[in-house]
Every structure is written in C-alpha cells, then in structure tokens.
Length: 311
Image (cartoon, rainbow, N blue to C red; front, side, top):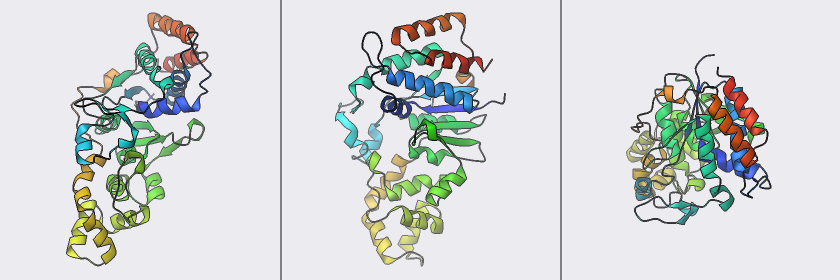
C-alpha cells in the first residue's frame, strides 16, 4: 500500500459528529457519546475508503489566536462566550459536546492516533504546516472552505470536504476550486480576503462579492497585483471598484496575514509518528473496555478493522 497521509481538522469533525448523530446515544452514566461515536466512525470510514497509511488529528490549541484578533478584532468574535485575558477565549460549544472532548482525546490516544497542536495556532495552521512539503500525498479532511488554499495537485494535496455530510463527501482538487470560485487554490486566500467570510467574522471589502473578487484575481493575479492596478488606475478596473478598495485600505493591510494559513510552525513532528498500525493486545483490550463503558457499540469493531487493514 502506497503511503498517504490524512490530516483531520478535528474540531470541525467532532462538531459535525455531535450534530449529526442523535444525542440520545449516551453512556451508562448518562454522558452523551454521540460525538465520540460519530468521530470514531468517521475515522474508520475515511482511513479505509481513502487508504490512509498515516493519520494526524490536528488540534486547535488556540482556536482564536490573539495575533489574528489584534489585526482584525471581529475575527470569530461572534463565537466567543467568555473572553479570557492573556489566555484562550472560550468558544461557544454545546455542553453535551464539552463533556465528550476528554473522551475523544482518550479514544485517539488508545488508537495510537497522533494529536498535534501548537501554541497560538489553530488546527488550520497545523494542517498547513504538515501538508507543506509532506513526503507523501496528503488528504485534508474538513468541512471548512478556509483550507481550499492548501489544495495543490502538483504536491499531491487534496481535500475531502465534509460540508454536506458523510454521505456526500466531495474530493476537492484544483479543478474543483476553479469550478466553484473561478480562482486557483493558490489565489483562494486573496479571494477570501476580498470577499470576506461572515462565519469567521471577516468583513471583506464592502461591495465586493465573489464574482467581483474572482474577476479581479483573474485579471491581476494576486491581491498585491489588484492593489497595484488600483493605485495605477489601470484599465480593466472601474472607478467604483478602485474607490471600494481604497476605502478598505486599513483592512486590506492586515487581513492577508489573518486569512492565510501558516505553513511554518515549529512542530517538531515527523511522519513516522503518524503511521497507523494495528492495535496491540493491551490497546485492543482497553478499546473494548471503553466501548463497553461508553456504549460505543459497533464503532469499536469498525475502528479495529480500519487499523488491522494497515498491517
């Protein structure tokens, strides 16, 4: 089996699992386990169907880094339930999911799945760093379009989009991004900067939507090229668009750094640590014990089969 690394946007997946699996599924002590079960089933199916040999559960050590907020204060602000001075703000999360996150971490540990995060960095940044220069093809699993910017046919980086659910997975390549938005993945961060993204609290340039943003990048290549053309008054850009860009000058000076995924985190993590292996006797016993204690049902067998495949 040829090596292939899978990078999970873990929070994106366990949120999806929580809302996609009935919350009536609980452990004997009454704790919900729908997200634990759902994420376990996702991992079993994804690694099997896409023949992953290596797997990393990328983690949000800081889901709203201060350095991003300093540049754009509205960044993810609508999702904050408690601001923590000099710490990580508390994200709005259903109580039933909060109770499951320690169990998710324990399950990943028992399975031998590497969990990787970094200080002052989101899972997106961990994914960007691991995907860049990886010594094997990479599949990124997420429901968030932010990571379209990492898709790279030449480097073997694809994205498995879970936005429409596990029954309608979409394999995203460069052609997919161009077909959806009219820009290459390498232009996607500039496109998102211009268009904005309400889900992340990014205002964008007022009056510039997807069509205009794509047209500007098709004509001028990059955001820097767009701004240079606006300053020079080049033909191909209307006076109205130039005025909108000028009005958003302060935002455009800082937004690109916020929108672009980091690719150079000092993770100190190598691909060997991500290799999937069948469970040893002790880990298998522990997994089956947790399965009984947490009411995981058939998820345990599916995970065991997925890992046995890598022998």
